Image (cartoon, rainbow, N blue to C red; front, top):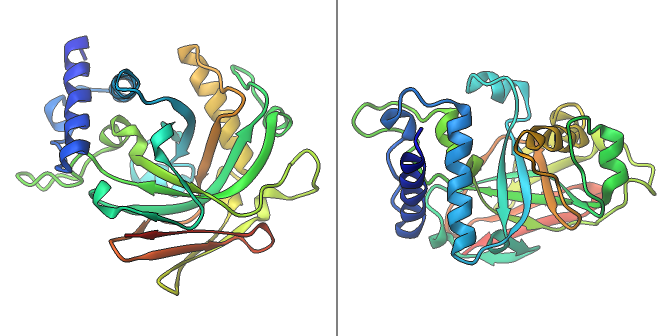
Length: 268
């Protein structure tokens, strides 16, 4: 894709988010686009956000399960950017009118106190560089039409990646813990996720590449291609271990992580 096409796509995403009217699928407009084009659109949109005063506070990893990768015909996870205006506190009332097609996922967030970079970042590098880990909820949205109204074609992974890997916001909560100090098997951390008092999903963190730290290592190695390193203080959402839950105005979400606390939010 040309620089002009990338800029136009970024502007379309920004307008869709501002007006809350999803734009047409890029994969329909640019049938020859590839994954690197999708990331280039994402980068152009995030650059536009920074020009408008936003700052990068971290990154997210998605499509970490083999089932999800097969469903969208991709052989690796995807990633997006976390901006400063995406963060909500535990128990927050989140304005639902800010979003269009709300969904939510449960995961673990790694907060770094040392830089991480590829190309040879390992799980042990991730654990050594992590200040603490805490339960989190990722709020997903779609600034691109999920289904094209004319053709009924479902969006592709190229559209999702362009759309900041579907990330829209996040809630940090639970009980922070230090992996370098506490003898915790991250694979076996589980979450029971309820909507309006009814259990909707459960899952184990092992669903994220067999260990959520592997996702962070993958991200550091993947970003190395662009000359980007993960920085101290950044928050890394390591990937969901439940299916996305549809949510709407009036819904209360509570994710119970057992000994690691709860994280919750209400959509007002």
